[in-house]
Image 1 (cartoon, rainbow, N blue to C red):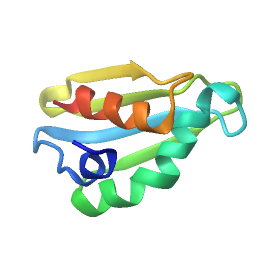
Image 2: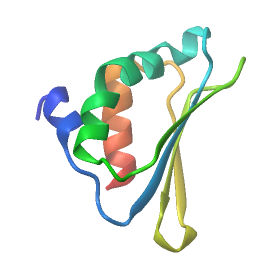
Image 3: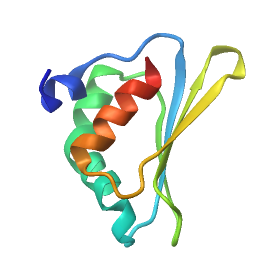
Image 4: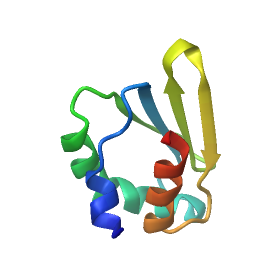
Length: 95
């Protein structure tokens, strides 16, 4: 499956929130910033009612958090990954 097809995929209904933490300028967060620029619009269009939050803070390592039903939360490290690798990691996390 191509990265553009992954970006258009709808997330499961059990996913209640997706939260990205990253640094605005850090090299380790470059892939996360690229992911936001390239994949965020299509992910949001495919999942319009899902809150997709982006939290930027200086020096913060890139991470993604997924909150599911009943307060279950999972996270994955994104520091140093490319934009396509970030997209794949997000897709794996929400399965």
